Length: 331
Image 1: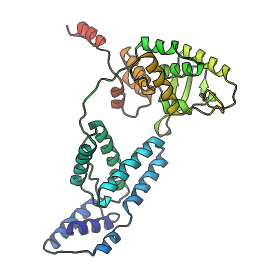
Image 2: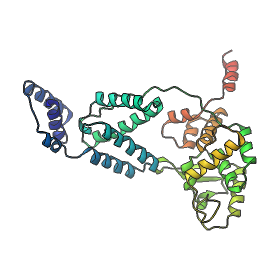
Image 3: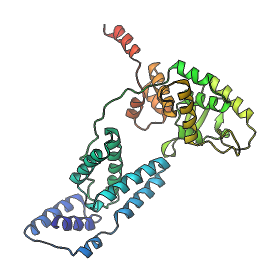
Image 4: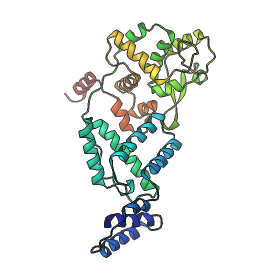
C-alpha cells in the first residue's frame, strides 16, 4: 500500500516538479515511509484517482480521433484497452511493467494467438501509456521496457502477371475490371480507393490524389490500360453518385471496403488463385517496383509509408534477381 501512496503523491505533483525534483521526492518518500504501514479503507480506495480507467481510455480515444486515425484503428485501440481494463483490477496509472508483461503472457496463453497479434496489442498499449505520460497522468510509461516481440518472417505471396491477367479476363463487369486495374497500377490502400470521387481522377495526367492514414494526401499514378477501363466503366454508369465506385444495383451507393474484399475474394476462389485480397495488390506493386530498380525512397512515397521499414516489409525481392546480381557482382 505504501507504493500506491507514493505513486499517488507523485502523480499529484507531476505537473509541478521537474524530473530531478521528482527523483528526490521519490527517495524522500521511500525513506520516510520505510517503516510505516498505511491502510486505506476499501470504500475510499477509488477516491484517490482523479479519473477512472474508462474515462482515461475515452480521453485517449478522443485524442486519436482528433489526430485523424481511421475508424478501424480507433476500434482496435478501444477493444484492446477495454480488454485490459476488464482483466486487470489495477488503475492504469499504477500499472507496472511486470503487470503488463504478465498480462501479455497470459493473454497469449489463454487466446492461443500468434506473436504478430500479441505485438499488435503491445503497440496499442504502448501508444496508450505513452499518451498518459505525455498528458502527465503518469510519470513514465511502463511499456518502455517491453520491446517489440520478435516474430517469424513469412514470405508473403504476390500476384503473378499470369494471375493478374486471369483476374482481368474473368471479370463479368466493367466496375470490377477497373478496380483490379486501379489497385494493380497504383498500389493504393482499399480504404483510399473507396473514398475516391470521380472528380478526383485526372485522366489527362493519369493520376489522382488519395487520402491515406491520418488523412495525409499523396498523389498516385495509373497506367494507360487503367485509364481506358476507368473511362469505360464511368461511361456505362447511369447514376449521379459522385463516388468513383458504386454498387452494381440500385440505389447505387458508394462501394465499401467489405464490398471490394468480397468481390475479389470470390473471383479468386472461382479461378483457383490463392488469397486474392486488396492488400495483395499493394504488396505486388511494391515488390515489382523494387524488383525493377525503383529507389526504395520513391516506393515509400508511392505507398504513403511514414517509415521506410514498413515499405521493406511489404516488398519481397525476386530471388532470381538476387542470383543474377550475385553472379554479376560476387561470383
